[in-house]
Length: 119
Image 1 (cartoon, rainbow, N blue to C red):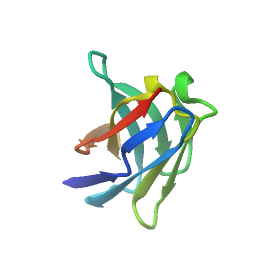
Image 2 (cartoon, rainbow, N blue to C red):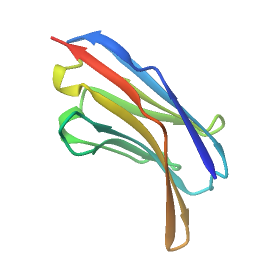
Image 3 (cartoon, rainbow, N blue to C red):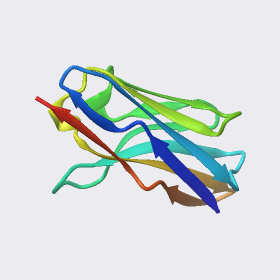
Image 4 (tube, rainbow, N blue to C red):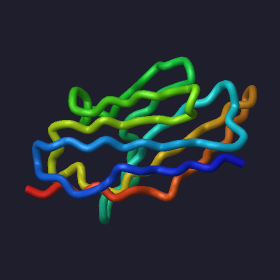
């Protein structure tokens, strides 16, 4: 089992910044990927940013140039720095970890943290 604990959400004005963090504990595989997803009211959950255990990253087009994902493997922690926030970034943000076991994988999700951007 893997436990994920997110922190750092809150309320910010448009144009402002927030930083999220997510600490993982438990059975963390040596080959894994951590990611942030978000879900706004009435919308589907979407991938925001992803980083592998080797440091490879990818971002949703909507956040490229504004958000930065990073990780500290020694602390099993992933971070999401969000700059130039827009009201449309308002959502519940979820941290995930995917453990890879050869050809199979298993996903774990955090409880979510609310990010609200006021206009």
